[in-house]
Image 1 (spheres, rainbow, N blue to C red):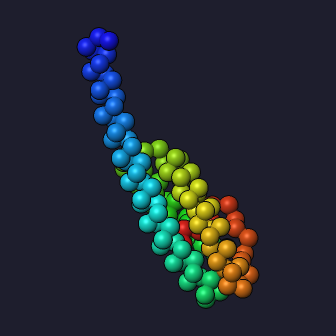
Image 2 (cartoon, rainbow, N blue to C red):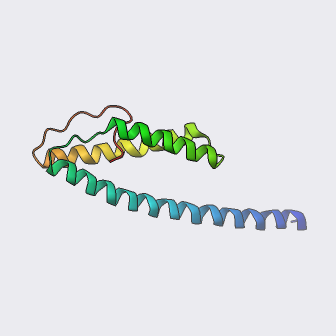
Image 3 (spheres, one colour):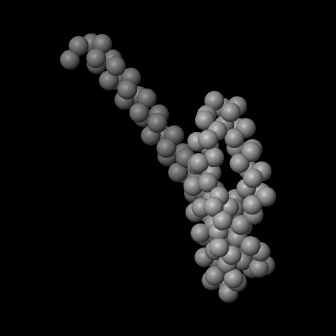
Length: 114
């Protein structure tokens, strides 16, 4: 293996290690986020509040798109990520509402940040 290829592989390994560390941090942050959304879901279920909040979601999407732009990240990607997470949150909130005997409203697409 040539010296320049060895150096490239070493640099690649270092970059991949950084990526792995970021992935681990993202997983931990998502776990923390879901702890809070579960608390919100229980609170909503206990008080008969709907599992979705379209107005909050719209505000969050606008806020996250702006943050993405400031960070040089594709705002459409940020919105897709948000919608993916929100779909999971809604499912949890609906399950909590059902377990509480509340009538869970069907989720609209892209609904509920908590």
